[in-house]
Length: 452
Image 1: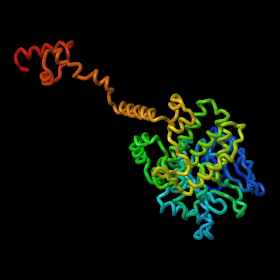
Image 2 (image 1 turned 180 degrees about the vertical axis):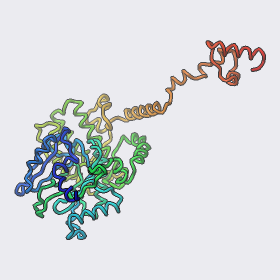
Image 3 (image 1 turned 120 degrees about the horizontal axis):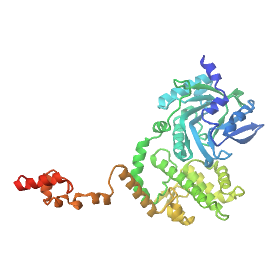
Image 4 (image 1 turned 90 degrees about the vertical axis):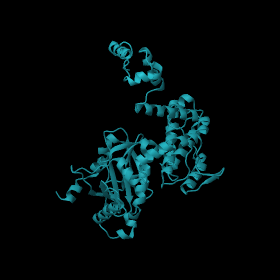
């Protein structure tokens, strides 16, 4: 079968199934242009085949690439994501002028080869540009979002020459649906290249493999360096590192920590059975602050995420957006790379509190801290570190000190039971203690003859 005939069989449902599983629990969203008014709807994954079949192909239509736990596409509600992607606005690049979709594909594949980036699993002509998608061999859970974001940032940076859209890299992003029209060009969005495995299915990549290629520091190196910094992090109360940098390990670690703090506040609410009236804005403010620090959203999308977080706190609560204006200003300054000087040190404009501050602010008990990941006291952090070290020692086969001392020769002194000196006992080959008559009688015979 010819290549173009194979691609023609790759319809909108097959393309969507490459990264969405209708058998999973969760939601996806569709965005439709209705006479200049973009309307969004969210649907259960199980209904995806039906929804895709009802789409009007003559309208601009976009779909989420990730899946969500609630019927909206906010990153705070992310369930999982099964691909990396880049929206390449090649039509903005002079070098791409007049090229056919097939010629654009050749340019994308050549550039990826030059950059050492594995070829995309799927390339979609969006009507004016190219959507590049790297399918993963398994979906990533919400906990992996900071690391996924880091890969997305580096991927977009390395594809900048191809016109990669820097705004189209977050997990809430929507991309055009295959077999729908791009009303700006009149062209139909379609699959133009599939990188096949020997079994004729699109190639899928291990996420750790892609991360090692895309990130400036390999995974194993990151783990090693993180372990070396653990003690210093505990002494500093896990304070966030400043700045909005994407070119070093420290920036990634700060984002990861911010995401964990957001998750800790969500866990705290679950432990307490919800948040009482009067405390909701405080929770919303700090959750949103850590969400911004994590890099999972930005000032442009901040208020959309705030609404999703507010609904999570209380479905009937209408938050006052004016109370978030200061945070919005700080987010803008953070994204501009500004710093705040205090006490001879520079910090990010967003809030980077110590753990003790958060513990006191939210009145977090020791029992609650025991079920949190990062918002814990110094003493509890030390206790956890000792526990991890102890577990590591046990896994390596190191015997507990009490057991070791109980089994030690210095305590048992088996030579005394044989009525000999320690040195004689060692020279005799460390014979068994009484109860083993053969060994004792032999030694007594040796002592009698002077052979020992």
